[in-house]
Image 1 (cartoon, one colour):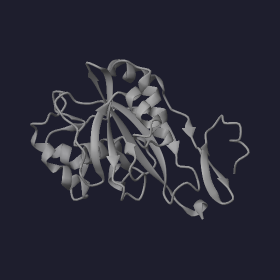
Image 2 (cartoon, one colour):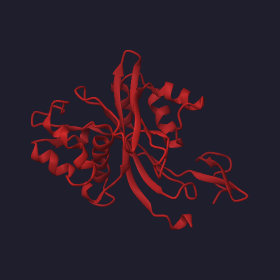
Image 3 (cartoon, rainbow, N blue to C red):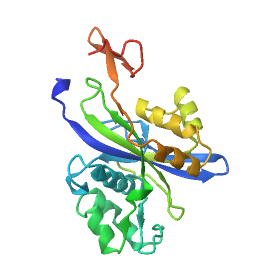
Image 4 (tube, rainbow, N blue to C red):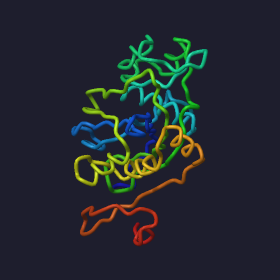
Length: 242
């Protein structure tokens, strides 16, 4: 059955900012009613749409990351003709719901307001594919990192996401281990990557050094027909699992 589930392209962006406490990343809690990752703390993201670009092209993933960041976090990664990032006072930010429901195209919206999507601001950090048998939905997801525009504040959409916060990666990991935050393996791995860096500049430099990330495909551990865990590449039993 799981072999028949199509793997959909998806993109996620880790918005980063500097604070007095150190590097912080923007995270949101998905509603428990969500068909995928209900109740989990995640980064803004979602599936790649046809309007984002040519199917399977890297550009489509980048545009999808920018669009999802705007839809879910209210932060638009776009620049004006002078190369300045959009701030909260710009009229373009009034179209969040229209982009979310698909009635307004992200690229067309930017062009209408004399803006350009800041695709160069995103660095591809990680590449994960949902394992077979874990959920009824599977995604081929590219994770990007980007410095959050100084003139914009992120906030959840109160629909697909019901809470949001800026948090130090190390603190999010600690809260995950304590059972306070529900985190998926890709989220944990990317938080660990971020936790190694003190500033946005350091994290973005490291992100750009990644180049093309290896594709990570976890496998599920099933005993007596029940899912009991997830194996990662490098685990002793990974190669023996179907």
